[in-house]
Image 1 (cartoon, helix red, strand yellow):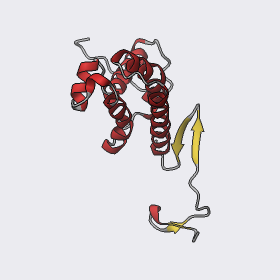
Image 2 (cartoon, rainbow, N blue to C red):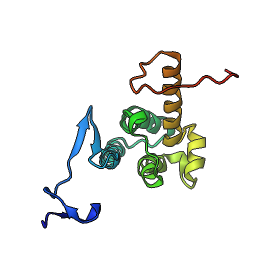
Image 3 (tube, rainbow, N blue to C red):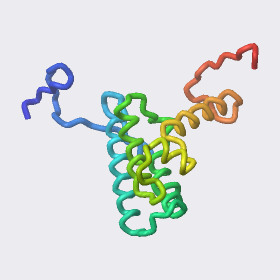
Length: 159
């Protein structure tokens, strides 16, 4: 290792290693991105989905939805209001887990991802995260959750 970190403009770097901060299982990179968390999250969820498909041979809609909703989706949504991705590539990295899993369901062969979601009565993971964020802001506004960031919420006259 040369001690030069080209990723940050070639400035000397005392350590060639990148350090991530982890709190409650959520990883934050030194550059204040959630990339390491998103990569680990997607990898773990894909591995868990592969395990579930390998162990349970029944590919019926009911069985697969129970597996997805009880094992895989909770892993993909843990603390999601905190790390919710905004870059298209990061959104697709997480969404791809659900996209791949729904392909394995018998009744969904030959359908596009959006057709599969409609048939299974599921929302995209991005849509669910957006909903979680809206609910969290509403809770802060109503005083049901502490406003630990001291965000000032203006009241609109129509409310």
